[in-house]
Image (cartoon, rainbow, N blue to C red; front, side):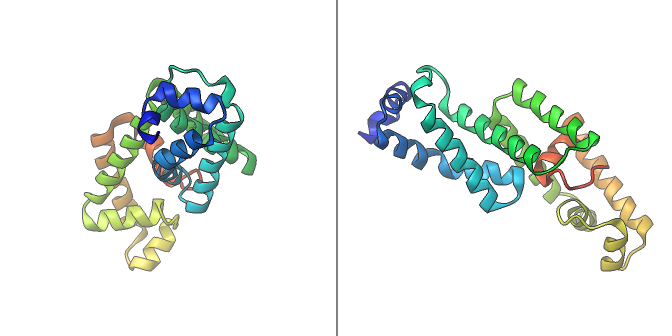
Length: 197
């Protein structure tokens, strides 16, 4: 029966009929990938699991209205993204700058398959790893750890001007390689509480 579920049309038909085995197959097949994607959005494994669980529960509730001929993998990824946005909006008020990035993310989600966003995030991570060592260290402390320039200066025992220079250089390198989506992708990767320069 599991082999039969690999046929999307058959899987959706069974889901619409309330087949729990079909639902279990769906969860087993996509759970890990969706948790990885959700975690790239929230940087919190527990919250990521909650998001994915909510997505699966919502899908089960509306299973009878699922169309037979749609891309279920893309649908689930998009649902994870939408759940992330919903939770973020509930948990805190959006600053004007953050609204701009949320809008930019929404545009990308509309224009591209959500899985391509996952690929772009992976590319950003790879590019950060290849930054010059000191430049990468300062950039990660700033963006990933959320330290201020003064805190980084004290921690690394370098001047604030040197810190600013490394961050500016990191952005310059990343923008050359990633183009005009750099800021949006860094926002997506490090979350809404990280400063964007």
